[in-house]
Amino acid sequence: MERADKAIVYFRNKFNCSQSVFTVFGTGCGLSEETCLKTACAFGAGMARQQLTCGAVTGALMAIGLKYGKAMGDPDEYKQRTYEKTLEFFAEFKKKHGTVTCRELLKGLDINDPDDHRRITELGLFDTLCEEYVRDAVIIAEKIFSEKDKE
Image (cartoon, rainbow, N blue to C red; front, side, top):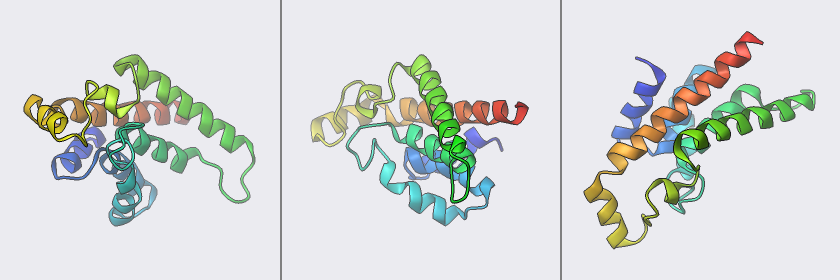
């Protein structure tokens, strides 16, 4: 099963967008599924349902940090490289969806407002748009990772 498909399976099984994206990468880097799911949990729905940066985006950014980030003893260039990969991700996601902000991605609707949440559910936005964002976040991150492998 491809990573993007596996991320959708997580999402359909009631894990949030960030968990769904990060877990498919984190487990491939030696983290346990439980650690990945717990680590990314707070970032769902734009960070604890605040609808800030999309959770699918933050999940991908955590994966980028896991792959490229600066750790103890690493050269400072690793941090800059991580920022460059992050900006590349942002540019690609924005090119495709116009924004990385959860509320804007959900048509300006507030998931914490009962009427807006009902509207999101009626329109099937979690099942359609959010799944698309999860899939695209994985695909964009994979593209960035494959570019690195060619360097």
